[in-house]
Image (cartoon, rainbow, N blue to C red; front, side, top):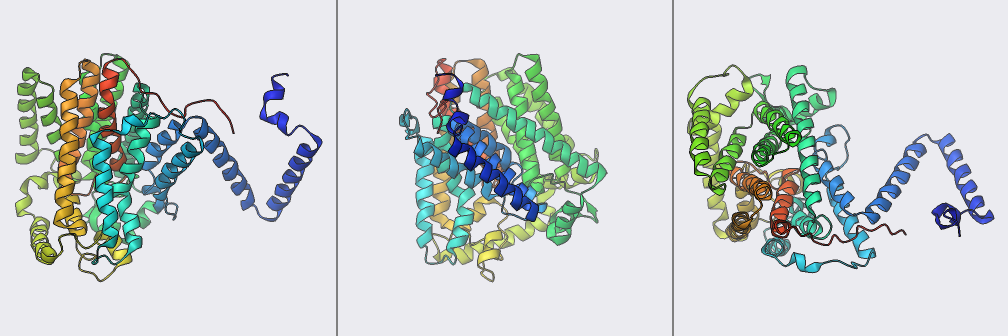
Length: 487
């Protein structure tokens, strides 16, 4: 048998096969002559089948695509009026279906036996029981809101353990994360210096201007993110982690990549005008100084950090730049009218929640509440921070459970970093840990880790730290599904 006899083309190289192929070609040709959109449908169908085939061969491709899409899915809805955020859900579901049909042969399920998957499963279980909360008004709101809150965790993290668990996968993740972050930072700079495209201006005109146009001018850049808060937080996160990664990197090319990421993303953070974003590098570097166990760096870093914070908080350097002026106001929050409103709102929320230990139901507050249960107290309540939203939707029981679960996860991450021996690997994992802790802190003032892309980046960061002890021994986990078999 020749090599051609073994190919898929050989299977249709018969009279019947060629006849069917000719019929399909003529059918599509006629359809395209009647309706030009059939061409785009055909291209989409072929592309989808090709991607499904490649994912079947190498499931990790799907996760790379998911990471990439997570940066653009929400922002692109300004240009394409479709629920593109569901693309992440589709990729997760498709990957699990493909793995199911592959039979999970060779899957090392023991990898999932750790505190991370158990904690995420417990949180998802609690969120599931919130479906039966008597105060909840909409099951559809629960579906939309639970995705970033809990569902992504129980679907994505096991996939990382199963098919994205090698050291090279960690490198691929960093490359995609930083490369896309650089692009978003540059695109934000384009918005700042050259203005907006028509579809972006339309978004501002339809309500986005309330939080992005301040003092009569477009002050807060949002790039392709859902808003300036998510843009600024994700840029600050990437900048801070890139700097930490550079400390442990000896290859000059790699260092330059990290430096470029840090510079562009720090600029992106500044032009976002997001006040809470400054907390991310502040907390992240403070944690790094402690975990690095280098007392000289600890002292030097503390001094430099103190000087930088002094310049931002107590001087007027670059005060004529609107985004910096906006960010600087974070250090006089008690004098800020919006801060006083937040305090008053939270007093009202405490009164409302006094007889609701399990909250008002997931999806009852904020944007989903306005969409699915308008007129409700929580629907009209501005939650601001993520923890306030969790408190409003899952009650004091859910809030404390969320705290406990993440204290356990982060505590384990710190313990793992403390025990790693290889300096470069240890530095990378410390960077992931510092980033996770910083985002958890900034959640107090903004809902960051339940929104794309920060939600999936945090989950990846947690999973990589949990995987790192085996890498520290120059060992690799078996990667399930990466074989060159065919349908």
